Length: 192
Ligand code: HEC
Image (cartoon, rainbow, N blue to C red; front, side, top):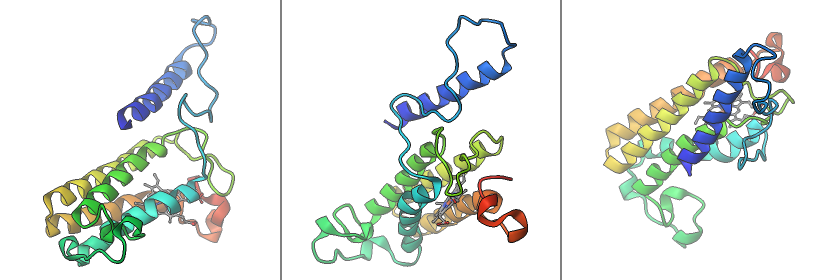
């Protein structure tokens, strides 16, 4: 699943690139690139960027942050684990919850590469900017580091992975989210 979404979005990106560098009038019988802002076939955008962050990045990174200070192996299931709202205390809890939160963050990186998503202020997610792919890769790598920490059940590794997650979130927020009034405040988000 992950591979196919990634391949679809990557091929869409490559396709757009080749269309951009192609001199006009050449190979005009070739299919046109999809208009900017159209998700690749099979992918659909349902939320703005802030909603995606609140629904996926925020809760999953909190699982990894919580695991730094509380040994996941010692977290007890509370009530009925099958309806737990804290993944660490649920059916797929303890270290498995750390693994799954890491994978969710890594997968969420793919959602940051689907064209057509808007930010709250109505600006398009700046995925065409040259630094975007690297910032997204930072999130993917941090998620996979947390996944490996969960697999290894190693507290030092989870502390390091949590630090990597914080850095990945911050690196992007510093550029595209934190905007002073002089930088336009909310209206300046998702722009440089
Ligand atoms: C590649 C860029 C990028 C990465 C990586 C990223 N964010 Fe964001 N995030 C943004 C932008 C831009 C916004 C503002 C979105 C908007 O206003 O629509 C945002 C908004 C948010 C919000 C909502 C804030 C609000 O205004 O309500 C939360 C919560 C959030 N991010 C959490 C995280 C966490 C946690 C991580 C790391 C696990 C993360 N983000 C990683 C770019 C990023």
